[in-house]
Length: 296
Image 1 (tube, rainbow, N blue to C red):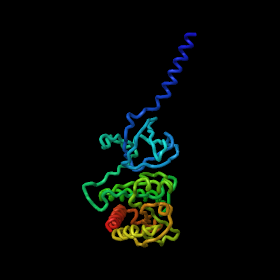
Image 2 (cartoon, one colour):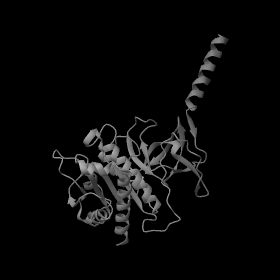
Image 3 (cartoon, rainbow, N blue to C red):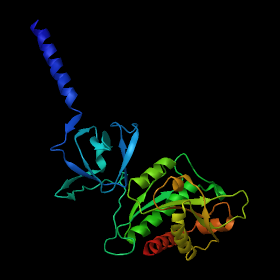
Image 4 (cartoon, rainbow, N blue to C red):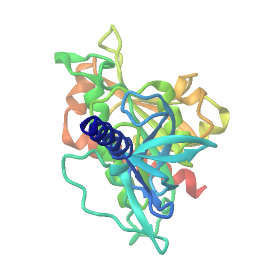
């Protein structure tokens, strides 16, 4: 009988111990700062849990408990979970950031604070079209639009950061991001301008050139300045401004445009698009266009 009591007591202690191992109560409800462009807010501590919102670089959260690399906080009045690897403790209003290993997908949003320009302090969202299971248009030689857009976005992001802007990219690798999530990323980052980057295609290979699209009339000025900036640098034919209700424009409350950077089904356009100089010209044109818009 004594042995049975001992086993029951041991089992009870083990159960109690296991109940509390996964959870670590945050000390005095520690405040942390988000250290990535877009941090998914989930309903449960799992990558498969529903995304209920987004946090952006520099946002502060109060952590209540930790479980298996996830931390619980509150978002829009409900208990939610975020990945702890993208949070840095705030001490005396300063975020203390440890070194991030190269295999983590933390995207830096440093600003070029040494160079005061018209873009200093502005939040610019770059949206490289397609990605993952969505290849976008397929051009000459089997080139995929999704690869060209991420290359262009990376180069534009670099140029914008050098000009002083805070840059958020809706994707930084070959990942599928829904149109709805792209808009939500814009909404979550107090965005000053949202620029969606694409390449065009057409059954007739003679169709060529680049163009900038807008939806709301209030965004026409941004589209005009970006198209003008590209015209100063691009070696391709300018097709001008066009108005169209693309989802990422129609559903976006921020200033937003969509740029088609050339036809990947046109031999001449492709001969330019595949060069390193093309990426530089795209970056220069878009950066100068955004600067002109905010200087008006």
